[in-house]
Length: 193
Length: 193
DNA sequence: CGAAAATTTGACATGACTCAACTGGAGTGG
DNA sequence: CCACTCCAGTTGAGTCATGTCAAATTTTCG
Image (cartoon, rainbow over all chains, first blue to last red; front, side, top):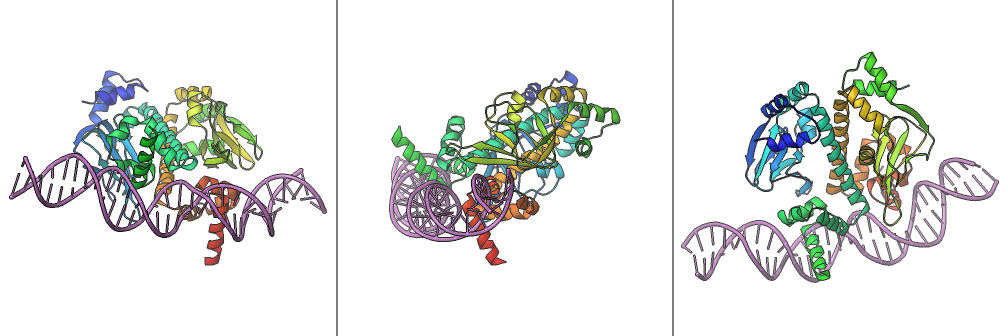
């Protein structure tokens, strides 16, 4: 069931059969329907979620009551409120399935235990963290150096299939502008074509 | 010489005297004058830099030729273009000393070697990465959910001493607006007081 | 002290937002 | 199978936050 997760780990570290079995024992499987939540604001984030299929979004409710998406996760990515998960403190975030989604997830206690049993997983998660960090720095650069229009085109070019898959209002939120503005950009674009 | 670095590591993992000596052997010390560079765009990032004293900034040159600061590092923080460092490919970034700065740094080769000799450093760097990732996600949230004015007050409140220490044009760049606008905010603020 | 750099100030321009009305599909139920 | 509703997406008018640019002032540092 967790073959995809194990394969993902094997890209970065070696695991023998026994270690694979240990890893597998520490994870659980969950199938989420569209709009199911794995985390709601005020709760402690109960797991670190590896996405097998589907798509999750992490969002926050702003002062004005709007949903602001900070992060999407798709197949092969990890999703969690790491701060809440790590410190076991209440989160400000929501994590919700955008579409029908399958995850492998690990609890905090199992995460700690697994790291002790298989220390080289620290290397795997170090690399995962580094990839996630670099991606966020790139996104920040996109915000600091480029207009909303450029952000849209850049994202569109980088993830053309993903853009098709999600509702536009979510894309607009993620890219930091309004659905109305996105509409305008698309209209402009289609004239050019 | 690297006591501060070792102490920092000891906050997260145990190291015996022999291991401390090995760590020390893999790092080098460098003293940077104000405006010295440790990385310029086009070069491969040659080190992962732990800041002992002082302050470094990481910036990029935008299409319009302006410097856009993406990241500051102060005492106790790591600084590098991790992507360039890791893959040993040319970087788009500049890393420069904002003030006289002392660093402990490690080359890519030594980094690899050290991880093999002392695998538990993977845990230390996993935690460092996680802290850095969480900080960047928070900053992204600040951009997505708050106005320039709110970003300024929020940063001012979080790092009052640091704000005093750096030129305002750098602060403005880091927070994503113009020096002129920052001036305006300060003027508004001082009326309130 | 003098030159260069940083900051302030003000006039004007514009990117992007708000809000409301309209359009068009996708379900749902009679 | 049609009418109704509901939600996503589009469009447009008016507005505001923030940018641009240039001049004036202050600070820093050789």
